[in-house]
Image 1 (cartoon, rainbow, N blue to C red):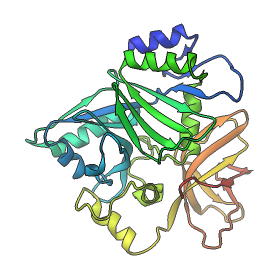
Image 2: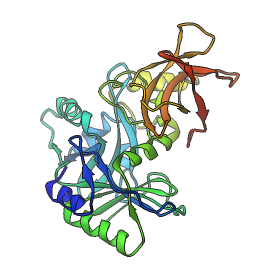
Image 3: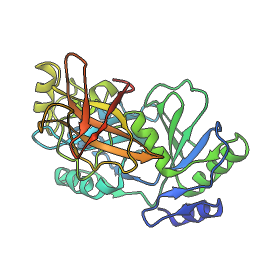
Length: 326
């Protein structure tokens, strides 16, 4: 976390732990919120060959990314399994990849392997930019992944009432203060933003879940995160085959259960009465106040009937919820 940004958050009465999770005192319910987003980082790609490099690795069409349009996508291994998912935005002449901090170094090395003698520079810019989230009470007019880049601030629409903001520290502090003082936004905890991402169906991966799923299993095709016309990229043949041979046998689901402790990534999910055979696995989960919400990749049941439990907690039922943009 940028030191200037951290000092500002502390001056706002934040408590920040060793993992940079940020907690504020409780504020009135019903207020719009502004959140520090501390679990994501930024990898920049600059140079005249930056777009070409990313286009040869990303599932989305990088050439569609402008200062007015961001994209979600994935980088895959040659077997078509997603190594990481990301949000891609344009900032002046640079491309900014927003992805989990835990994967940033590995993705930088992965892309560097393909850079060869290209005119492209990859850099970890997590210390140069701050990430903020906005959640509003009323939906805005922006389309999903619509972007706006001006005055040193990049905005990416994640939902009708949610926006991810990228800004350098000075602008981030001004942006926070303006939304607090002029627009009535209350500070929100960083883990609450992670939960909003989860509930919004944003399929962030981790080192534990990397190279486990093809992008369609993460719902990226429904989020315009896969282009089937852009041409070749690493893993493209498998991703295209999955698309043209029909519906994927596995898909992303949103669920909840009554647990305080969230299950680990890749925790097995089974039928309540189906023995030990796995029906899928947890992608990511967060527990709060006795309720755990999770994204899971599950075998699709054509009947639509599911009676699922965690393999390690067969006494806990999973309740499936509507997945946004599915």
